[in-house]
Image (tube, rainbow, N blue to C red; front, side):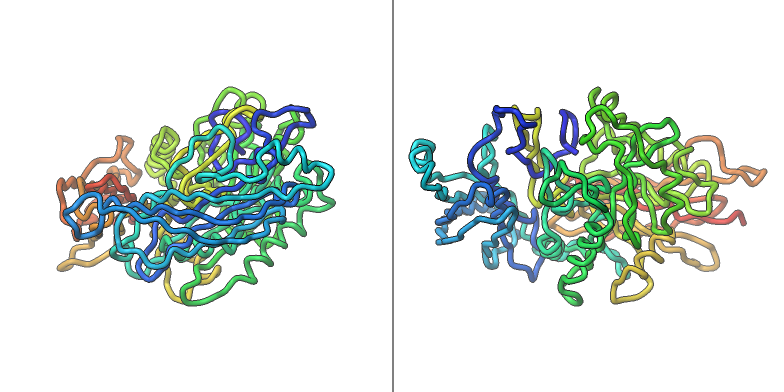
Length: 541
């Protein structure tokens, strides 16, 4: 949760006051935020959403919206700066619900990059006994991008793709870590499953796993500070809401998962994402609702015993501040926490959490260290987005200030896994994640396949990109680790076997298995988009 400085960002809740008479963030207006997916694939029409929360407490009429669309780059055009247009949309929306998304379709836009600046004019509905106060406090206001106090408006950035995002044939691309409105507390809230499904279609995903906080299910929807009689009905409500969504062609598969707070081997809180469990899994350690009582309530081992669903270490080395570490008792993962000696162990590491930061660097190093020990965990990418379709807003200092970032955006970093059949289903995805073939990316496709080339056992690495993501590659690198003569893995660091610079958008690299225990690859496009494969492993021949 974004309760203290240094935590991740998401839709910001501004009305909570700890029962205090003051808060610099408090305004007698609902939270109003314009949001939309960061990209639109061919065949989709970009939709902007007006997110309105707490309108049951502060009802408003959304009269009209003014939208300025500036195109900075048209795909295939040499000219820079292609002008702008303004649209006025009459709304007449009576917003009086606790939480709602109101769509504004933008119709088809030419492939290119856009900066969109939206404004909404809203009128507060004032009770007779406070009509005078309403008049003094600006009953009619125009908000640019959001109504969040003290936060400078930022334009929406939209990339309308000229081609479908590159993807390996026979693979499915998904968001592995995101949150719905069932994750909500004093400072944050998420999106609805219906909106996330539409956003997934816009950005080109095949599936998304909604990993809401286990501790948020344990509190009521009406009052996020009041414990629910049982968390299980709320988890089931998420499952039912997802099950009611449209199915089939053009509708990405949504799954109800969980992000469970669990105790590591040092008695610290870490997070486990669980891929579509059959039922609710408890874990309340660092929910922030018990003040200084933040000891783990369940261990990682207990979570693994209580479910057969695939479990992943969520942002295992996400850097944290002093308050998170010593007040919320949050910690990092170790090899012991993976429980690799158990029948049901951690299946992968979600070390790419929306941005290639220090947490990514340390997580990648830990993953490679595990590969060197023969622990072939899957690399997992996700974004930890709470709504956050285009960029992110958050409480920086509780009661005092907000902040903004372009990180942790829904669907930006995706996990692409090899599937055996279609149409996509939970069973098929479970089988896929039991396998060893996936890659993580924020743009290009990079995958491997085992092959027999003129009688030589080999692996072929395939790299594909489009002009939308920079076309060619700055580099493609292939790494591996050999067996020693005694049949064990070499103790030395893995070696770089191939390194191609300025490689074309379609590149295939065959590599002989030779005496390798595993091979893997990484690439970066000309515009800085990155991809990384799982390890292709081999028995010693």
